[in-house]
Length: 168
Image (cartoon, rainbow, N blue to C red; front, top):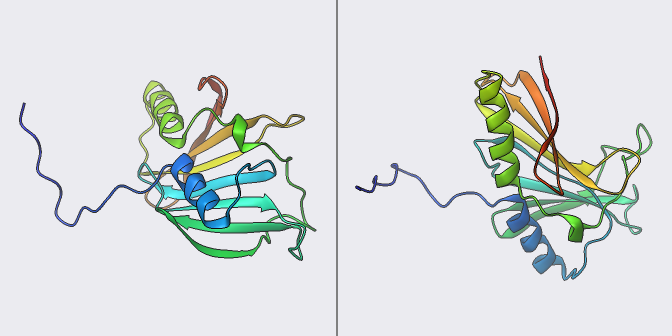
């Protein structure tokens, strides 16, 4: 079989969520990450260029800090403004429980989109706590080039199986 030459201007692939968390842990010196609110990435085709890690931080004025991770480096740290006081996080989870990476979540969501005959241009990822639980789940939202949401697939972090698919 012939190998395809690399695309013009194609650089290294962006990091998966697990690779981004490994970079976050290395940059912050955290060895065990037990207080995660969410890990999100937007505009993935299929992998986002930047992952945002939101964790509980008692020193932050909002009690939550968010870190932007691009590849293997943390680019930014700031108080998270997405939650308090307007809404409360679903919960906190231990990153040690994460068994399914964003690449596997993409494959499951892409399979569901194929079954539903939905074409999409890019994906938004969110690893969050499942309601009334401390188990993390993936919410993968497929979007058009204009940013219109076509549907969201929720994926079990334990098994990688689809829990629910909602198409618009």
